[in-house]
Length: 609
Image 1: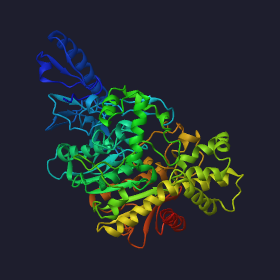
Image 2 (image 1 turned 120 degrees about the vertical axis):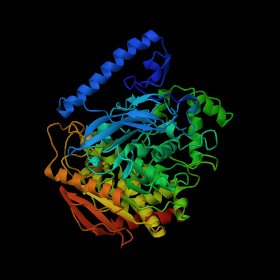
Image 3 (image 1 turned 60 degrees about the vertical axis):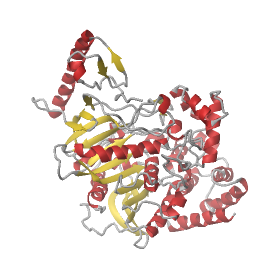
Image 4 (image 1 turned 135 degrees about the vertical axis):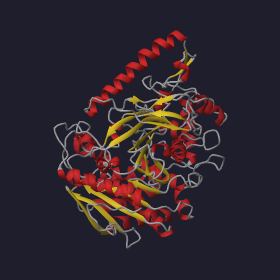
């Protein structure tokens, strides 16, 4: 199955054949078009020249000079790649290469299969336009968008001309509950991180059904999205040196489902040697929403097949039929309810049969307990109010609040039934009520929602992360660092749900505001600008993350005390990053000790029940 690079006709690949009137032009929408010599001449001259002129004019205007800046270009074993220039937050030149294919398009017979490496191309890949996102529903409008041919990555480098002194490489995996997300500049731009001497790679991977459907056997073993990420890491190993990056110093980092993905890459025996440090932000493979057992998944696959009237005699027949279903038809997320249950994400990683190409064949906890996890320096952490990711809408919608939270006991049973069987759910719900809601006015939503936020954050994010770092730091020799992000600046992702800028806490993903640039328009607050404190927080977080990637030590010029951030093994140490609206660093021990101890006891009781 031949890969035909590209996704958008604006990313024309200029081949030698087209220059001399050959028979084939490779366009970036993935189609090889048979055209005549005359058509080549007309199209090439009109289309290419106008595109190049437009690019130069844009660069000319951006640079404010009368000279035409040279577009950055690299030559890799896969082919020639031409990018574009950008400018960092502090005015540093960035060589940007957008939409580079790292895998063959996972379409047709390659749907529900492990990814296959991209094949070399002839000519010049114009990496100046963003790739389309993988198929998904918009988080806020629920509109369908994206396409199936979406396995592309972006590379940002301050210097592509050096063959020695290669820079540390940071590879970012986006979040989005394994259902949405992308590597677009709007949310993952390099402008902050590229003020430092690193090369940044951002990756897209298959999502939802096409990324994680599994029949529990060789027909569709699952975890295709994780395997996409692993293939991108292999691409980095082979190609990043041509962009000025080091393949011997790779830091993998991600947030939410991207953080979980990073964790799975660490757990997999197939990725050893592909990266050397990692950072997990608000997500662990022990989070209850990050894993599904293969038995459940098999039933999901057959239920999906029944909807499209597929034969179900064998799993192979089922998958062959599902490969014929139009791509967008697969994204009917009302089939399984998407994230209607607080703890449930339908399409997530699972255990595979132990066959060739398997990514993970044991439960994540079992891998950790049997000391099979890769021993690498790491940072993990969370934001102060993780649970706001699900409770913010309750502040904004009074009707929804009364509809969903009419009976706290009923709600608690609903939450716990997602984790344990009915009889055990009653016991756990009673324990949760006594711990979180005892003594508060259940008629006052301003008392109920913060407690519900704590509960959801603890069960969905915080306790799984603490459990993981405790297990890992005891078993591994390399240092594990833990943080909490508690800074509430001018902007917060709560604004996207509240439709205002009320301060209700630090929500899931708020730390990304200080690693990647977001516009005020993105938050619906065009009249606001970042404060001096916000700018300082950018400096702090970028310092911590990039110094960890460069030196293996998370330190910052904001505080020159190199021992400021000690490993978690040093008396359960964690670094508090920010306090309310103050960009400070505080040393702490025993993170939320009472709440984490409560959950440790609940897990023990569940095991004994």
